[in-house]
Length: 410
Image (cartoon, rainbow, N blue to C red; front, side, top):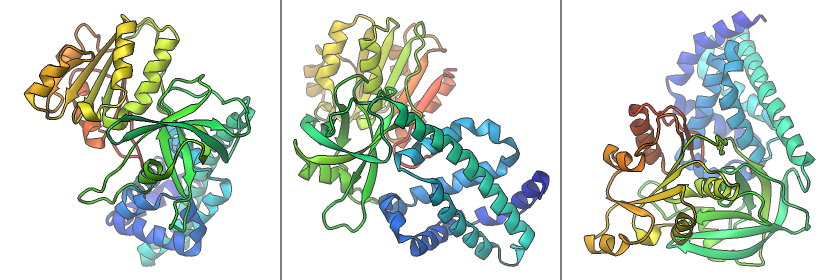
């Protein structure tokens, strides 16, 4: 089948499939797990319950299919998906399982429109997408293995120590049990943990940003205890880590991965915008830049609920005093005026209470050019708000990290 025919047939039927995209992905996952229950050890079942994983998968498939003739333009998206797959230890054989369930679900949804030619077009399109991603993933796995101390799959680490950073947030220092050197990583990348929570049948895999600079004799992750929300359950793994994991315990760790990391531009100001625990990858960037002697101007904004829930507060004060090129700012959601008054003489500089505004950015970005490098991480709503503010100011070098399944910032 020629490429033009594949494109025509998949485009003709894609509209019918996305008309009820939630039903399509719900039925797909039901089929996948019914025929391959072992994959529940790999997929984040909490994301399945909320629907975020399903929507992310649908968006990715449709993006690649609708641009089947322009796959070379999808490099950033493909690398992001491949990095997530590597962190989950996805292997080529998994693509066959996913493809079989996907095609079965498409066939059921299209009904009479699922002609042999249409299904062949979808099969070829999916196969080509799988080839692109497995090629990137193979290169990534090889890169991990080739580094001193590098490894594939999950490896045993010892929790060296646990440190409380603030209310509800703890750092875990991890060292390899085999005594091998730690492979380098890019500041901003993450590792995966594979955890068997007592009372749960399936292994849980979660990703956590590395929150310290590369080159340390440990990997550090900083984890927020996720409380139950109005529409979401309490975080299974984060609560397990907080309640049960102590110094001396063993955790299974996958090598660092991720496409959100610091790109050095030695003469370009660096602006880091953190919402809550989203400071974790940005802290790694900041620590790395300062340790490497980066002499460009660096600004960091930390938006948090209140001073008690401000991770790395003391560390940021120390770094601000040591480095003349660093300016740090705090923005609290809503705290009493007397609390603000007690914080005013301390670094970082207070921007006040409430939602981030253009006026706050005027103070943060005083004399900072539009072409500065902007990195942002935090809750999705915070990042979308920051993105809109920066875009309106003409700041084009914007990068964002979404915790969990990929979701659009724009």
